[in-house]
Image 1: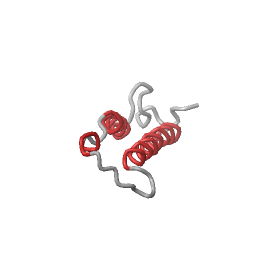
Image 2: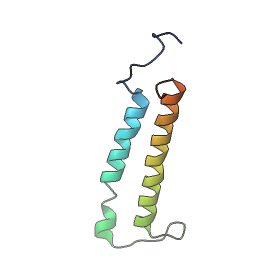
Image 3: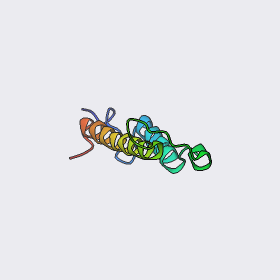
Length: 78
């Protein structure tokens, strides 16, 4: 692959950066209505807040795996 097709080592793909930013927003700003509502109906057998944090953990893990795969495909990871 030529140097023109490789991303610079310090520059991450824009979609990866956007996904990481969304990770931060979702992880740091859980739904506030759960805090004041008090009604925590189960989702898939888990209390809603527990389900939310499990889903956030899976979403963040998926973003890290996707970033790794994208960078390794581009030859940026040894």
